Length: 452
Image 1 (cartoon, rainbow, N blue to C red):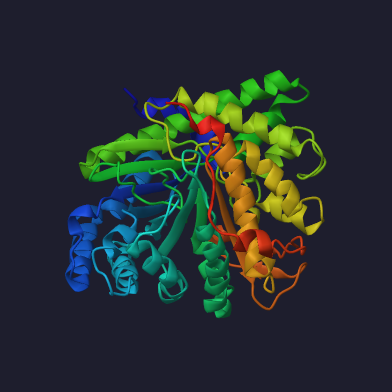
Image 2: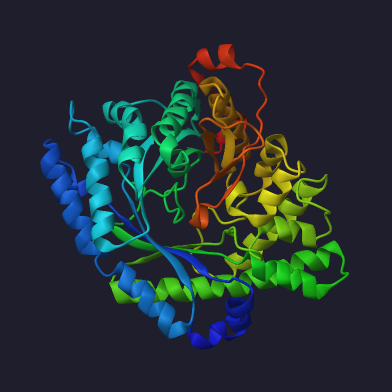
């Protein structure tokens, strides 16, 4: 049993080291809302979200006040909307996006995720329609987030979907060019997408999940960095042990919040996601942890090794602290959301190529990276394909969330504000992968998929 005494050791972390619960995310199944009449389906969706999540924000605020734990975001994830759209042939899925946005505003959450399609093995009618509508949906709505899963270790990579998503990412950026291309910051392309991820923009409520569930995402890069700074000149094994112990304490706090939210909302507790989620705030950076380990700057040779140690130690410490661990659970490296990553990218220490290598050992992938606005769609598709290949072969979740900065070139800045932050536009390799991308078909599943 967890009680308030379990978090006494974290008081200083909360007060001085940016420790927080990044999100309480309520997952809601919309399978019982599916209807061949799109108007009726949207009405059912709106009503169910409002009924289940009506007290979500207040509950999060009450827990935060009672325990003194900052809870930054309250969010909702829903069943991939492509499933609902499939029952309404000929109807524009944009109606669902508007219903989601309206429901999210009514209940007061920060974001709602699930404007999604799962196309790792092929397309259905709802998938085609939803993917076509993504640029408009993310342009017209403020709180809706979208994701598309284009590959898995079991099925391989759907290269036709990869081709389409390169174009869709660019179209989404263009559709919101007057708002710093914010639409593309709400769109994630996955390989091995988890069904219980509480973090945006990639959250959706998988078809294997309960009717409603509470998932919590913790944070705490600043806590880990502070612990390493206090440890001084210790060897790398001691560094790993210290990260494990710190991750244990962070996760216990997340478990407490998850169980309290579950109890008060009369909704099952799902998982705690262990991921270290940075922010643009000073002292809340994964890059600074790596530099505390001994790198002059994140991106230097040795960065991937340091990140591998960090990711592994976070999981080992966190898994002992929670009865149910899930989601992504590792260390995020979103460039625009991490003060240390922003600095490293600005000074040239960190490139997209180095970031890609780092994604082989961490969660999730190439995340929140500004690229030149004139980047051709086939290059975006090839970036997605490379990242999906890392996920497929290594049986891990990988993702791409790049933002084509329309009208801007490498070295210029794009700023979103808030948790999404901002940072430099990073150059991409300009040699063309067009012929490869246009071949289409599927990259076959690797040998390691044959585990039955």
